[in-house]
Length: 473
Image (cartoon, rainbow, N blue to C red):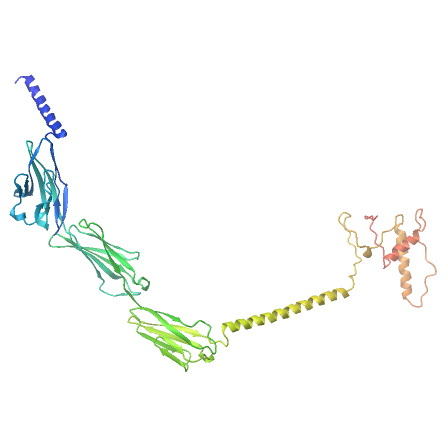
């Protein structure tokens, strides 16, 4: 063959392929079969195999069918012919049918699916003049688990060790189910898988927990997830914890007094199982007369007396144990209201007495202060710098020495004045005959002595306080 003809053949073949592709795109000759890639069927339920047919405008559907692939070869399970109708083999005639056969729909429904139905199914469509078009899907049979919750083998008792509270079981599932417990308790879960003979698996999850009475009535939830289930399967389980009685006494309000009537005390118990035994006793002495026990209530059929004070005990028992509660009762002479009134009156009287006492003290202080003579001032002068020492009071300081008087003259005059006073106090002694005169001062001014005498006289004790560093105007 010449090289040119050899090169032209592939070009001709390419044009043919391109022509068929364009025809398929434009729908002139094209047809398409659409099926799901995988179908999960549930054991014992119906399975739907969808097959949607898209036929071109210039094509005619002649037949649609379903085939199943077996190790020995493919077998036909259903045929739809627009002209001749529907044909189904005898082994499928009672549980297989076309859902809505047409030139665009070849979907079939298979009832009561079993493990034998697992395999590959092919939907084929025959058109004229294009021929056959097909698509395959894989069928997998799921087994929906049977779910239930069973209680633990032993009762839950308050204060016991870790106990199996409950077990959640997802039985005979394919594939194995996912099982868990939802709870806000601090328990533990134990998972166990059991393989069954038919290829299924059972999943058991036990919940272990240390029981306490405070969780009585709490709810656990078993959650099961599986592909055969449309949503999570949830089973609630309520805990039943058994405990000895919790006791409370009602009726005693702390205001029981002599003469009070119609009083009683009731013993209340919270227990699981319920309490079946109640008993009242008095611990410090015998039960007083006029007191009756009715079921769980202690009744005082008479007015209260002083000797009703004491310690009373209520005992309660159930199948788990016996517990008790003690109540100390004090019978007062008066009620709370009467004691409050007495305290109020006593407080008012004490307040009045205290007020009178304070008034009396205040008057005594005032009268005593009026009779007390003025305080004598000390004749000692603290010499401070002129800028910081305040002037002494007028009545407590010596008059200022007149200007021009010499200090020696003042001292002489004061000494003689003191000598005269001592003589006046001594009996039978004559005054001195003469006394020396004061030292002469330079150019003494007139009436200097009289002024000096005035200074000594005004001091009261004939003493003169002279501060050469201070000058008074």
